Image 1 (spheres, helix red, strand yellow):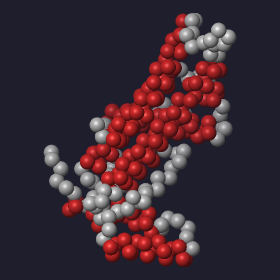
Image 2 (spheres, rainbow, N blue to C red):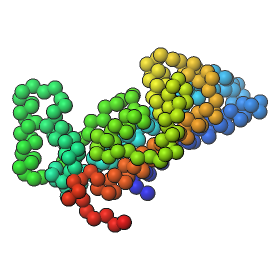
Image 3 (cartoon, helix red, strand yellow):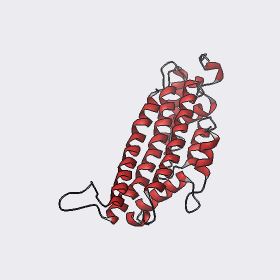
Image 4 (cartoon, rainbow, N blue to C red):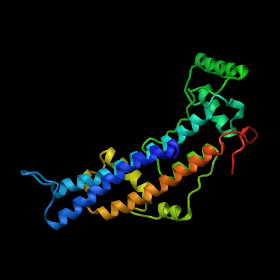
Length: 247
């Protein structure tokens, strides 16, 4: 198992564990003998809604964390000491230049010159790609399946997921949103105070949340597999620089 897959499984396992807890909570609420109580208090319906609402936050956190893990894994692979900027694919080299020359930053003339000198010195020295290489992700609070697909294309690879999973994430769930867009929307509405936690779960069941969670996890799992393959096949490098990969 790759480090990327291992990290994803650890994080997604936390969400699965929470969903198991909610399932037990709902079952016991229906039976009239809740186990999750003390001698002085039990979980009220409103408190139960608060627990349900937090699923949206956990799922969005997992979405953004998965994007971070995937992009950082590509960067770490590119920063292997054996590679030089010229070994990178055209799109990855463009990202390296953008980061080194800081072309995306609002700099004064002196700092622009310093960034340009740093870039030229690095190229003249034919040095390896440095650990300071970063790919600006943006998208904070706005990651969904479309944004993830665009990020993959930006790194030089069209995101490929199975037909079944693609149908799953494109199917409208609520408010004309697919699963990831719904998670993004609910997270932002909660974060910006546009909706209360109890309101967000007013007509939600554990079954609804379980289906939503399953769709998001299946999609993210295939995203991780895609990036794993992208890295293992050295697709972040120019074809002439890629080591021979055994079939």
